[in-house]
Length: 70
Image (cartoon, rainbow, N blue to C red; front, side):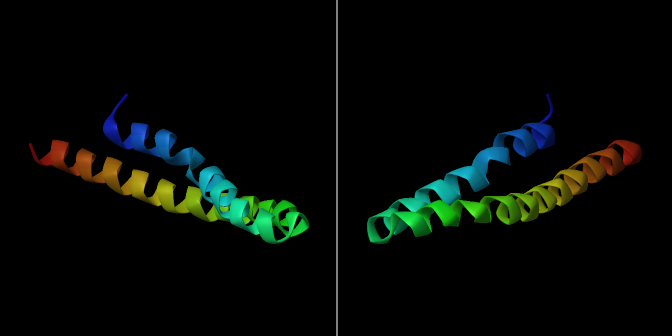
């Protein structure tokens, strides 16, 4: 497995951890809010996935261009 693909796969769970860790202090204030805070997982994951994919494509394209020059 090459480095860009590993980074893409390994970083895929980051939104889950961010939403989970952010919901813990919210749960102390209001448990219902913490439950609804998990709804943010969908848009956060979608945005994160697009950003990660852009980085992956850039890394692969840079590697392919470097191989073409060599």
